[in-house]
Length: 110
Image (cartoon, rainbow, N blue to C red; front, side):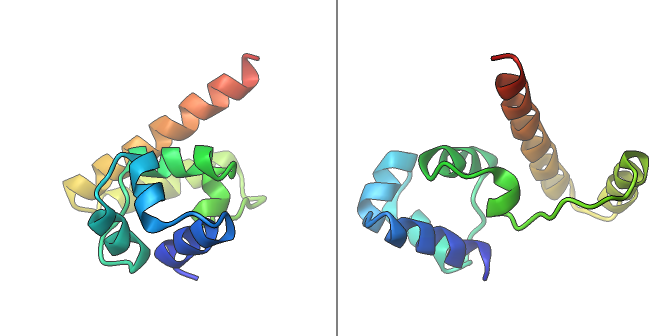
């Protein structure tokens, strides 16, 4: 299932219209439609809002599976592969990491 399909399924599962979800996310309904049809990528802010609205974590929304590989190997993998990305894509990765760090800090300081 693509990210857009997953967002659409989450929305429909809660019986929320595109118009309603777009208002909750403070975006245009057409933008949400493009996200749900995978014609546009959601911003980090939209991803953060979706995880909050649907009470899911970012890993499950993005289908990220946790592995037993050592942390250092994972960090090196990120560093090595980010070198091949366009700058805007690296910025997106940085925003995702920032959001995840903020959520981690919130959960672990309560």
